[in-house]
View (cartoon, rainbow, N blue to C red):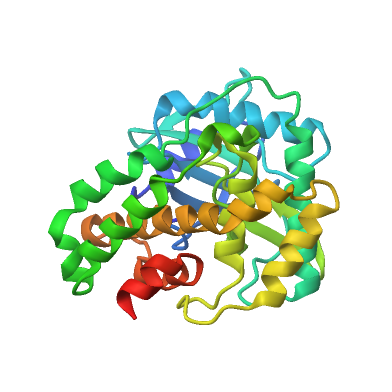
Amino acid sequence: MAVYTQVSAEALSAFLADYDVGELVSAKGIAEGVENSNYLVDTTRGRFILTLYEKRVEAGDLPFFMALLDHLAAKGLAVPPAIKDRLGVAIKELEGRPACLIRFLPGVSLSHPTPKQARAAGQAMADMHAAVADFAPTRANSMGFRTWQPLFERCGRSLNNIAPGLYDDLGFAIEDVTSFWFDDDFDHIAIHADLFPDNVLMLGDEVAGLIDFYFACTDIRVYDLAVMHSAWSFNAAGSIYAPQIGDALIEGYGRRFALSPFETAEFQKLASGACIRFALSRAWDWLNTPADALVTRKDPLAYMRRLRHYDPALAKRVA
């Protein structure tokens, strides 16, 4: 979550008037995240999240996201579906952007999850994957492995402005990982693709909600777990690996979807791909985030450090 587009109180009040949610009391921009503009909105009838979809989110993809959230909510999962206005419309426009009002879920995001919390989060991902077994819509992964080389080329040697040698190291890793990416050999379903700790709401040791589905897509099921493993199992700098967290995630997930021998053998490759994906998107954002955006840029080097953990070839190259 972040704020790129400023919303006036007058515009927001007019927007809310189309809903049965009461009158505006307050609205506060949320700086965390990097994708969309988000506000915490309080009205006379409750609390909501307002999301304005920025350029990386295609308006044509929004029906997929909304359908997925509705599907998961109907299955009893704690996710935040969009609230429809009085005419039954979920996706509207505000300040020139597609916008949705979303149900607020209680809970806190963790900075330092325990193994018990990680185990619960892994099981929550498995529950989500089970729930989409009969979800028919599909969406290509907008940050899938076929996009990595083009995005790398768009960043170009400006990557070395982030850190000397980053262009060569990341280029080597992309070639190393994608040359052995056995995409067709895995089970494909609708996945979250971005289930970082800040997208899992916890109440104590229990998962209270899964949020921020705006990278959801149809891709390798176990890749979703690999993304989660790379996000949860390290400190923020990516310099310290916590195996007890990573093992707990896989254990929790395995209560419903035990990894096959093939998935186990390929897991490090999938996790390496996850690291490349986030190193690239963070690098692009680092180089291109507007100076006046209320957004906290995230360090791409934290994912290069994770990548060296998963990819022995890269670790050997930079040793």
